[in-house]
Structure formats: structure tokens, C-alpha cells
Length: 200
Image (tube, rainbow, N blue to C red; front, top):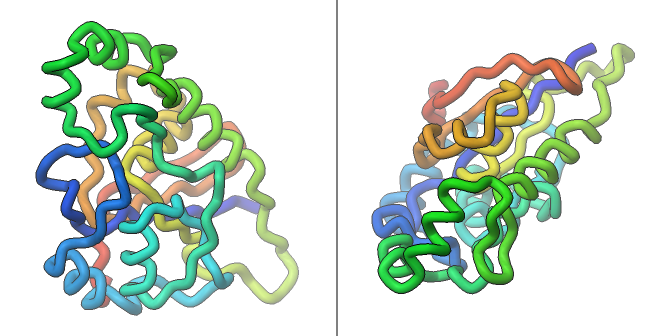
């Protein structure tokens, strides 16, 4: 039996337009409305669903009619001391640190985690998922649904495709889209970028 995981990115937040490192930013009103209109796009399943635990992921889930349980393995990428700042601001004051962070997957922001650490814990979460039982009741059409930060989706894609770490920087995850992984440990198929709408 295969595992099916649908990773839902949060709707637009106040940090989306400014490229700000996550700092508890809420959804914009437009983001809330779009998520509310998409309620019902995902089938009912196990409740609550795993999530990154950030404000925008929690609010997105609420507007979609889902209860969430923060999953440590799916937490957003920790930016440490850069949390709440924009990338431009950090680059202006700490250019060498930012250059190292962008070029070396083992580099970490002060007090944060590296890209390798992010991908490793997301891989651990995926690999720990139980395979669905063949006995009734049959698993839901989407299997496991999780509402997670875009960085987590990108890390999951790197893991699923066994891609080199630099590929992470070339992946774009749009707000309120679904990325579906299907398969089993070490062998995943991927469908990316489905817009989340009620008529999906």
C-alpha cells in the first residue's frame, strides 16, 4: 500500500509581500476570504491534521474548516535571530552570513537551523508515516492532509525527488496550493501547485 500526503500551503499573510522571515504574521483579509471560499476542497479525514503551528497555518486551517495539531517535524524553518526581519534588511547588515546561508546548505542563521537540518527532519516525518491498512475502512482520498509553511513544502519536494539541496532555492510554492506526495519511504511521486478551491 502507498501513502498519500497532501501538503497545503497557507493563504497570503502580511509577510508574503515583504519576504519577511516568519514572525507570527496573520493572514491578510484577502487571504482569509480566499481560504474561506476553499472550505470543503479537502475531504474529511483524521482530525486534527498535522501543521507547522505558525499563526498563518493555523488560521488557514481554521478557514478551511480543519482543526490542527502542531507537528514538530513540520515546523517552519527556524531563522533564529533573523526572525521577523526581511531578507533585504539582513543582507544589508550581515552580507557575509546571508551569502554563506544561501550557498552552503550546512550554514545556519544565528540561533537557527540549516537547510540540511530542515530537510532531514521533514524526511524523518515522511519516513515515519504509517502505511494505510488494506482493511476497511479505506483511507480517505487524500490520505494525510497537513497545513505547512512553504519552506516545509519545498523541503519535502527536495526529499521526495532526491534532489540536490540547491534545488530548494529554485522551487516556488504559491499561497493556498496543494502539493501531493504519493508512494512510500524512499520512492515518491509528486503533483505540485494545485490551487485549493472548493470546486477542485
